[in-house]
Image (cartoon, rainbow, N blue to C red; front, side, top):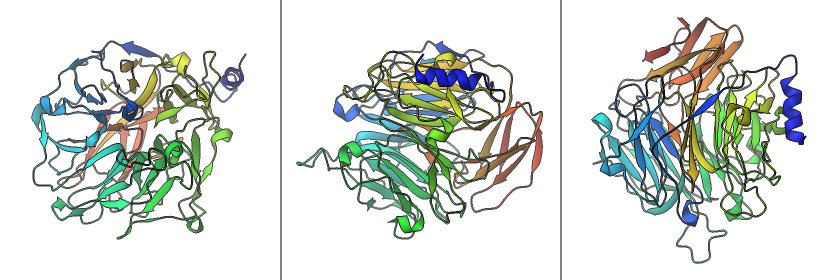
Length: 503
């Protein structure tokens, strides 16, 4: 028996473990393939959001050299989708996309990342989109592979961060030819030229997060050392009037990885977000240290069993390559789990070719064990972007995966035991999605804290209600700390329902 499988067997028989392995059923959908030359070895994201207004999320899938597509949600109890792509969304060169309400009209817009000019598309009724007029946003021809957004105090428009990859116009490239991160800060009701956050180290994921609960979101960048080669590292930009990098004296611990994706979630119950970073060769699970007084995360990868560093099934024992990562409670037991989309860059000889996706279930002890094969989601395709989100409003998180060179996949989570609640936040006017808020959900087992963000993952974004698994809890207390730091009162709700809170 391989060591990874023996470890799974040992965990699964411990007295305090026994988490229910979810059962996922593959769903037939119209074919969609992310593909193309070396510029599309990376990227391949999906945006999950309701653009039809029926309460069910649609899917916008990047195609690379193939046209991107919109899949309309036609689900009842059984998940189903139909391809129905309006002309403004049928685009080539798309690497990923993130839904967000840019102009505060309570209709979701779409940020489209491309090999070429990035686009801000204004959402309209019934999934209609058009270019924004009058925002002043101007994108040059970039190879864009990361994105995040936040609202800074006093602004009516969001601050946008686009992470670029290799500068294709650099004659000395591709190595040591990484482009900058481009920061668009609003100037009143429009955008001016972007601020170039340099040095850039080939960003593949970005996330604005109020990591210290101070009311200010700083910008974390995960970078691919394959192309920066030397002298680079992961980055955290302090979003001051003039952004600057945190350094080691402030608590930032320098390290370099083949950074692909960022997931952020409080897993320890202290109210501060921990992170999971995907890479080629291993994945990093890091726990925030609130005693350090700065942006300090301590590595807990081996302690928690979250390395996912080699294929867990099959005969290929070479290192895994991780892409999209997401925290989510897939079995509704009240403990967040981790999904990792995996797949060789293309033909990297030192990395596994047969590299199944990982689903790491969290035990009561706080450790994790591999369950993708048992759950039915251990795809061997070259996976890239992904999303765990409830696609039919039954309270169970379903799975969408975009693959390079192979059709995209959708898996429906089969309901079992375990209660849940979904919290849909909103603000009137500016920042209608309440980006920067923290949702606190309290049961007898403790408090789950969720920061509302845009960004992270690998080229994949989601908008919609926040899902919480609750185990056996029949009622739950909910409080929202709104952007700006104003907390609501605790309110008690019955479980297994969607709660809508508006400020």
